[in-house]
Amino acid sequence: MRRSESVPQRFHNHPHHRTRLWTVALCAALAGGLAACSGESRPPVTVEAPPDPSFVQEVVEPSALTRHLEAFQDAADANGGNRADATGGYEASAAYVEEQLRAAGYEPRRQEFSYGRRNPVEAFSILADTGSSSDGVLVLGAHLDSVEEGPGINDNGSGVAAVLEVALRLAEEGSVPRERIRFAFWGGEEGGMHGSDYYVEQLSRKETAAHVAYLNVDMVGSPNAAFFVFDGDGSDGMEAGPEGSGAIERVFRDILQAEGVQALPVGFIEDSDYDAFVKAGIPSGGLFTGDAGTKSEAEARTFGGQAGEQYDECYHQACDTIDNVDMAVLEQMTETLMGATVSLGGTENDLAKGAATEEGAG
Image (cartoon, rainbow, N blue to C red; front, side, top):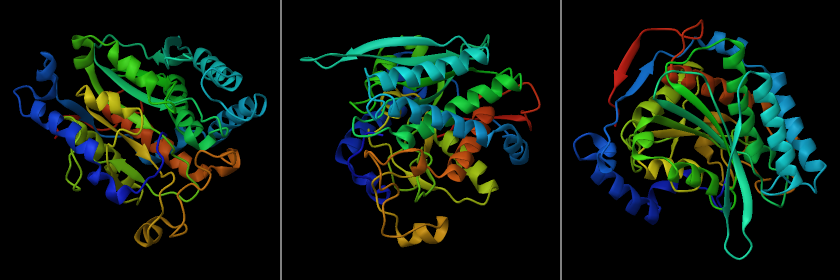
């Protein structure tokens, strides 16, 4: 995650955020919602009842999450201690993700891009799709790169592990989603969200309108974690995301609440890969467990842990190793992501529970 300081309670005071979301709000007021700005109509976000939590717990494999993180740690250890763009550590991490996806029946592809003028960095993201005849696309994304200072196992090996595990388990269960689900492992996030920016820039207006939602997963195993969900509808005093983001927020909140977790809101402040999607008017949301910000007394009472200390004291440091990740938190976040993916993408097997309803969220 690209952030020098994180204080979730103050996110709504970010000045650039207010300016950008004023434009989003103006577009949303037009007929047809945000997609009206691009000339393409956007259907309402379709939400189905999430699968039973006990069933999801049986599907998600904690040992697999550990295995993914071990692979990223090994990649960093063998390549100078990090997994930054255009390094051996990044290439080894990418090769592992691609190998896992191919073994599950996916056909991963690399989307190449470059950034930087004086000394351009040649980078790439990895994309893989489920088979579906639908024109709709639900994207689950996590950035694969680390900073140069450390291996980045919480930031963001944890998010990659969660997205990868959802992809593998859906394939194993033989799920046939209503929407095409695209699993994205972004390059260039730590240098300025270049991979996700490039991805969205390459979309035509029709393709942009076909993106039903984007779910961002960045730092979801923090050792002094709080459970944050992006404030899609603006009801918590922050700027609302694109139309439909409120439905995504409610899906995440409801899944966590069913497990006894009262998630807190976090704002869209242009600090992770959701940013390009939000600016393009694509309904967005995601999960986050904290970075360099300080846990409050109220958060410590709600989630446990130590008040007055950072959510992750190893944020962007060499100590962000596999030992820095709270595996129980990562497991719960992965289960939440799995439930939300089924709820928003739909499946035609045992993962599907409940009748479909449509919400024109806001």
